[in-house]
Image (cartoon, rainbow, N blue to C red; front, side, top):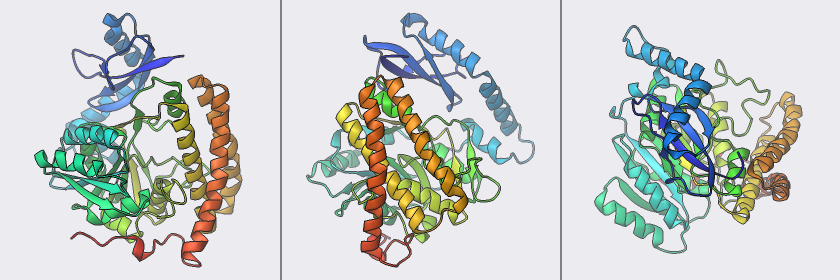
Length: 440
């Protein structure tokens, strides 16, 4: 579908099914609609339909979803029926399939950690959405990372006066990993949910994350999809096509034994487990791993990759990770070409740093090296498809080169930073000085 695309959702379990806009009502420049279909709140798939005629949009989206997603809907209804009949102990997939069986509170507290740096407008929207979450008990901890002004503090304190769940703390050292580690130490609860300041969460987000931990006590990390908030510009559509963070809508378990992906790159394949805009962890486990690597992450030498790194380290140390589609959030993609170029370069840089760490720690088996080289061509093909889908054409092709260059520079940057700061120390260990002391 060429041109600006309006993004909406529809709940198929409702009697009066209505498409609801994610970022607002349709505009005159929208040429079509992408609708995320849900059943009992669980995302089941996307359909694309023309916007006009507007009066039949909901009916047309419903028919398209019920036709295209018939098998998925049947599976979901079957899981719902099994979970609700009360006969025996349902297996893991049954316990996490349908949100109608999730507990809105079970006494387990969750600390939501939002790391931010000088983006007050998107932060305000992020916090407003977090205030609408239904799970309790919860705290919302905003980590202000190396701020250049008091604007973030003022916004958080303003909202905190009417909502005691919201707290402010500052990490003066720049870097997303520094900020995440600060939140790790200052948080109140054992379960920590991380999201970004350019994300808008769904009201049931924490309910789903908590369900992921409750369904399997061996789970150390729960991740979820990150859907595009809007697809108005070519830059937004390129990002959406190149990084389909909400493409997988089936619950999955991952570990080193019985729950493995079929990819030859498992568990090293970047992006397989989720992304840093939407995940939750058990505090004690991540603390024992040394926290987030300060060389990685935005604002650090690696410019990214700290999320890929912590997911992998959780798996490699024998823990289990769960991906739940019901733990849905919405991401504001970059809207212009310049900002997109910077972000694509940073993502490539972070990926290169992540790969370099794996090579330096000698974690990657020789059998994985050959398929890893082949991923270069896979990435190039994905970038080509994104350029075509977004109609960025020549600039889209340049973005592929920018991302590839970022990978090379990121690998070198990590190597230099690791040798400078850690010497012969184990690269997976974060120096104690990088982890702030607990608030408790």
